[in-house]
Each structure stands twice: as C-alpha cells, then as structure tokens.
Amino acid sequence: MLGTILLIVLILLLIGALPTWPHSRAWGYGPTGGLGVVLIVVIVLLIAGVI
Image (tube, rainbow, N blue to C red; front, side, top):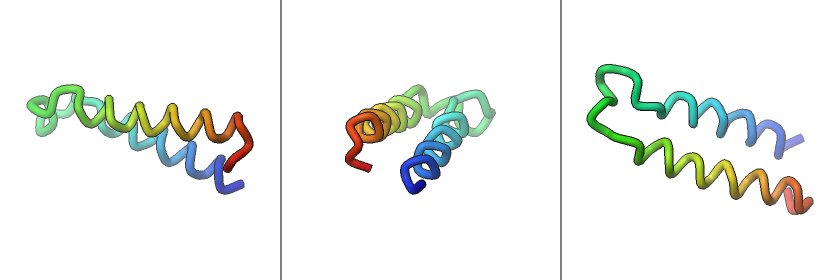
C-alpha cells in the first residue's frame, strides 16, 4: 500500500518537474533527471519486494 502511494507521488513529481512552464525553462532537465532516478530506484525496490 505504501509503495503504491509513493510511486504515484513520485510520478506526479516527475510530471511536475518537466521544464515546460515559463518559470522552469532555465532549470534544464536536472530536476526531471533526479526524480527519474528516484522513481527507478523505487520501482526496483517494489519489484524486489523490499517496499
């Protein structure tokens, strides 16, 4: 249950960090890349059954 909620929150954060908004265009892909790494780690932990 906790893993599913965490996965949904991370996906929403990943979508929100996309540099498509006028105030975030100068950020580049740093926030998206960082959240993408966290999302991959969480998915691997979910598949492994740790979470």
